[in-house]
Image (cartoon, rainbow, N blue to C red):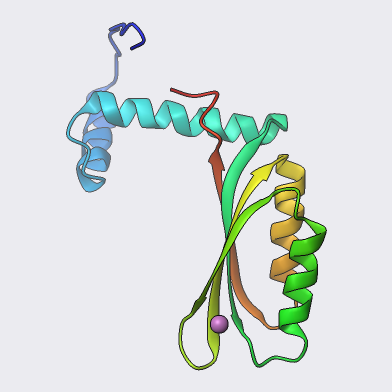
Length: 138
Ligand code: NI
């Protein structure tokens, strides 16, 4: 296990109260873990900005009855197969499908795939969950 260092943080009362309310609302058991997560969040954002290898998930919701939509979504995933790790398809109801596409690769490629899928006619909603391979953060 990596060596743990302790250091003091000075905050004005108002900001500390806001921080405590925030960590309570997010169910953190202590300030240290909340603080560590804030740092990790910044580090992951930086990985995306710096073009390092990242990981994430794209989710899309669509009506599979819409003309050609399945072919378009399938074609797109074949075009980007180098960055797609796996795809999960869930039939939400009679019309709607939820697809979760796990990705790993350059941020530019991942964003391009997410934007392209979202722009397909008939895709009702799409999100890109920007995460990390975990190699660069502890
Ligand atoms: Ni379906």
